[in-house]
Image 1: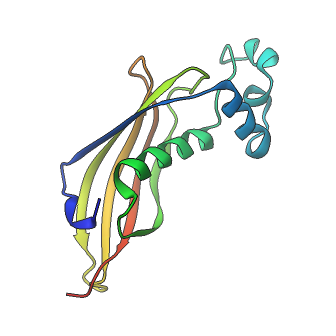
Image 2: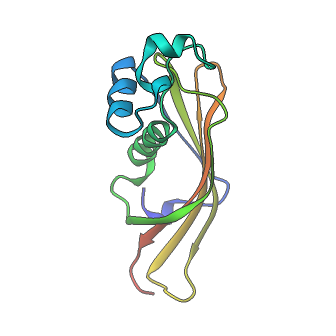
Length: 146
């Protein structure tokens, strides 16, 4: 989507994305090797009752869905950060994740008119409609001068 196609109040949906055990293990072993992400047997006896995906892996899945649904082919070039990120429910192998992105604000920068600013909220829901990820992000777009 191009920056001009975004508007406040817009809802963008994507998915489902099926999470596999192999993917959970591969990501965790490379980037977040805590036992509840990497050892299914130990995780079964742990506080989550089984293997769970890293929150950072969950964020990566959301980024993939957002890119496929909205950012591919756009003028997006950076993100200055997140207002917040929450993982209210764990992601487990076998979960089918669905993204809902709510556009909060769309504006051109007053100081830099070639910069578009998009503020939006991303949520990932599992197949039980539980929120697995909730974050608010700002994305920057390189625009033509006006």
